[in-house]
Image (cartoon, rainbow, N blue to C red; front, side):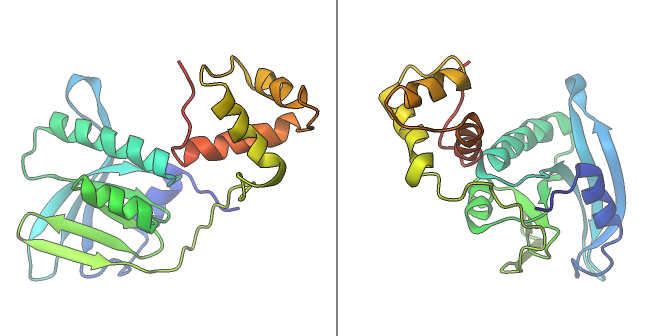
Length: 205
């Protein structure tokens, strides 16, 4: 499993060379303070040779699960409103953006770049660049892939049987094991984490 930090993502961008041509990074400011105490991960100044320049307000997603992309896109919408720059565009940057995540961002009007070489950048009627289908250079594989098969499926069944939810992971495991089925705390934890990352399950407050 390869997982890189937000700082490493910034460093990668600064040393990306012509990977995002025709886009050129002219300026990159990290941790930019906005109004009302809000903070953007970065503001990047882009240009196109013999073409226009533009600024992007950036949110970085070191983990690009659907749940995290949704949270980051909502944060971008708030930050854009606080930036007080009418021409700045929202831009999400992640190690890799899959088809589902790309569609989520397109539906919200958010441009994106990933470190694997794909991107979709729109700046009003001036710029439209789309390059997709690049191989994921930063695979982040879930520990349990088939969460709805075998022993792993018992967790989702327990959640369906108990709409009010469980007060703890231990309670969920006890509920399953009381029915003469054995499941470990570790397996249950991994399945719930996968369900949360995929946006299929949310913890009750």
